[in-house]
Amino acid sequence: MLKFTDFNLIDPIQKAIKEAGYETPTPIQERAIPLVLAGHDLLGIAQTGTGKTAAFCLPILNILHLRRVRQEPRCPRVLVLTPTRELAIQIHENLVCYGHFLPQKYAVIFGGVGQGRQVQSLRNGTDVLVATPGRLLDLIQQRHLRLDKTEIFVLDEADRMLDMGFMRDIKKILPLLPRQRHNLFFSATMPNEIQVLASKILVNPKKIEVTPPATTVKRTRQMVMFVDKKDKLNLLVHLLKNKNYHKSLVFVEMKHVANRVAEKLETNGIAATAIHGNKSQGARQRALQDFTQGRVKVMVATDIASRGIDIDGITHVINFELSNVAENYVHRIGRTARAGADGIAISLVTGEEKSYLANIERIIKQELEVIRDQPYHSESATRAKVIGVGKAKALIEGRRPFKKRHLSGR
Ligand code: AMP
Image (cartoon, rainbow, N blue to C red):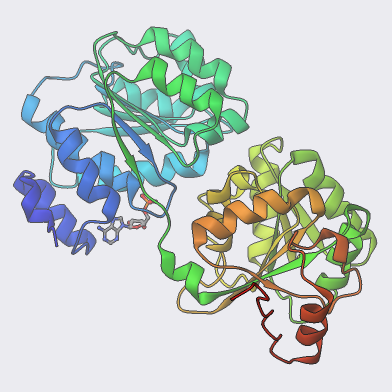
């Protein structure tokens, strides 16, 4: 197994890693750190929780220190672009931690607060700037900073940027960077638009892909309920009325469905909230707090809006709609069964979603348990496996179906 000492990182960084209490690198760190140190552009397909922040911060700090270029005030040497204020703050905290024994300066800027202190930190000079796109453009327009001395550009959570409507801002930011630069690009999923963006930014990138640990998949009891589309909401209400569903995360594909589902739950006396990319930062924060602090027991979320949010004690993950990206299933159910607890994941599947289910079962290499004992069970939505009357009868009666004898001429 690789150790942090195998990377040839400078002593002040090694010391900070030890102080942070990290013993062994995570899989993404194992692969990304040597590539970034060697100067490669990187495409990292990974979500928060995999250790990706250290995977880019550690080699960046190493490179910056060894180059010994003096930064100029208002001209960061590294720009880390990230979609949300929470992520920006987290990355900045990590930089301060890993760079604790280095002379470099780190600043963070994001919207929704006064700009005075942020402008002051830029004036004092900053080697690494962590920013959300809107505030970055604002401060550039006001001439509080320039990007033409940027040596390394990191785009974090690209798919979430897309979901939150930051694509236009990113396209405005890119031409402000020098053409010659080192690029690191991270996204948990790679929809088409993100692939196009990555190919615009990256030059001969090395690609790394990491998935969440398989242990969560194994510890989660995973079930399917087959249901007709018209009954889905009723089935959800039926399930969530159960007292054992203390803290349930319900996944949907579309933002407007998130709102509709949360409203339906509310009208049925189930306290629920919704979180998705169309909501403002403040509204998302409030929804999240209501859920984590137990004021509501259900949170309805889209994949991307919920990512990077770490919530303890989720008892049930319900897939109200299956994603056509099978990997999202693994990310979703990874939200339950945390910290050694066992979790339950239920997928509500209609006839139209059967092919998604088949893809999921292929990547997790197991067939999900079908629960028929529910009031909205639809036999027509079940797996398209046609079995003979004899076998069906045997299964219902709990007998082993007899084998068909081959009456060939032998
Ligand atoms: P991230 O995916 O960057 O958000 O990191 C997830 C969490 O893992 C953070 O709390 C990090 O401090 C922590 N972490 C990152 N790398 C390691 C490591 N090698 N060993 C232990 N913890 C780590």
